[in-house]
Length: 310
Image (tube, rainbow, N blue to C red; front, side, top):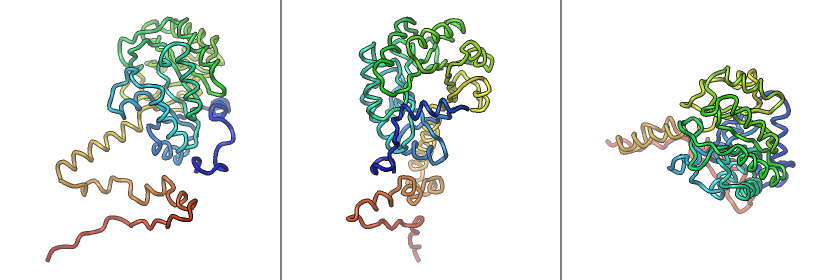
């Protein structure tokens, strides 16, 4: 239980743990987790780090990913995922929520909420998902100033600079921006919305020795590649940003359709997480054991069957 028991808490700050994950070699696999439950399930599957997507956060709130949410709203998601999973979390910091002072405030809030890393991007507000059309880019030197501000504000937070320039400025523009951001203090670079394996390889060739992050989002501009394939192309981190939310949303859509059609959930029970599975995942018994005043829960097994009429 990484949340309540002090001896179970990580001994190192999340930023140091994230850095160690990236620097130990291989590729850090960072699945998106859109809430605390998703974070626990990812940890139970064996993952050692997580990603919190701005698109997943906003979609879960029922609004588009246009830079509308605030630092404090993001911090709410960070806190629940970090405390539930105990894993170092990379957070989507959008454009930094403003200029230098806003970026510094974001870094302090995110770090205090439990984040291990953040990436900020070189778009102008209203920003768009990196895989959409007609993104407006910030001046490269203005973005570099944001990166420098983030580096100055952080204690341990790992800072990743994202560039969306490949779509409009080509590979030369993206590489030039990346080099400027590294000089400003970025720990790693995130080239967004590359569309072919050769583009990924070329970017890595032109950034020797630099830690690079790849985005394997579905339904975007990047074809499917595996983590091993990204590693072979020269990348040290890969995210699947919205996958957990997409699956959850599709399942909920089916549930509500069945409920509206059938007047009950009986046709969906075999697709549900059971009460036993839920309590095991969140560790209910472990929490109850911490307080002697709580009587241990006896969990009903399966669904009760109603009596058949004569």
